[in-house]
Image (cartoon, rainbow, N blue to C red):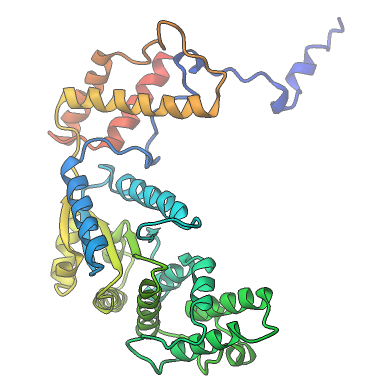
Amino acid sequence: MSNASFLAEVFAPEAQRAQENKFERYGLLHNPFPGREQEFHSFVFGQSQAKDQLRLRMEQFVADGRISSVVVEADHRVGKTNFLKHYNSKLTQVFDTTLQPNSTGPRLLPFYTNVYEYDFFFLYSRVVDRIPEGLLYALGDGLKDESLPLDSPETELAHALRKMGREWSTAGFDDGQRWERVRVLQRWLRGGFRSLTKAEREVLGVRDNISNTPVGSRFLRDLMNLLRSRELLGGIVLFLDEFERLVGAGVSRGQQDRYLNDVRNFISDFQQGAFFCFAITPAALQELHQIYPALPPRLGTSLPLLGLRTETEAVQFAREYEKWFRKQAEVQIPALKKPVAGWPELIGDAIIGHVYLRLRDRFGPSVPQGHFLAGLRDQVETLV
């Protein structure tokens, strides 16, 4: 063997080196517990009161279609983002299923964001982007020779939809042209920097671009009502996370007033077909009451999330989380075959309890789930 042969291993590409998974003997892909600032949105533990209230309000929304809203309250790292993303993910799966042929049940279109940018028009544009082109195509297909039951029958939106309906039944107007018309309509509805050229507006049958929130909100409301009347959509569910960003130090008072006023008007415009789920810290909600008292009453029923309050609850949470994570590993790596005696314990109950008690000294009687998981992660790294 050459004296330099060991260098072959030193300079081998990373992909060629055997990667040892020290967690494989536990039936895991890696340390299951997320670190600080990492999310775990596919898993929601406990929070039965908030879950029950959310389900009740959504059942009412599905039944009557009337606008409804809830506000999820909790301090940082208690689990607001995971709660919202969990149900956004679940609704997305159901929505994709209901778009299949011969499907039944209401189609609820979910939308999640925690990005608000400089004004509400940005958020409005992203909501429009979320509407599947297939729904607009189906709407155009159903507008052949039909009148439009719109609240505002002479708006630019009404003109565009009537023109689209006439085109759909015109001889020679092929499928490719129909899809292109749908895309132009959606670009026009977005407004802002994606506005149409004069020639494109003429093709669509409108004179002006949408350049402000009030106009866009009314058009979006009319479009949603039309989709609902055609039974193409049951409504839209808006998960607005980290709403405290609108009352943060980096937002001027003038910008706050404009944005919050637009949010209030947006909620007021949608009397049917929209369900709002806000998430905010209690301190920010209190500040919102002070700086803009007209908005908090519109945020709806309060759904407080709770931290871990007992050592027993903390152990149960850790065990349920590890069990859930192991199921994901079994799906991703079928070769991980469970031993006859079962997988060995990753971390003992006593150590889990110690992590909880240490954090309780820091946070008080309610330990945020995110901080607890990060503490478990650090502890596991020292043991495995």
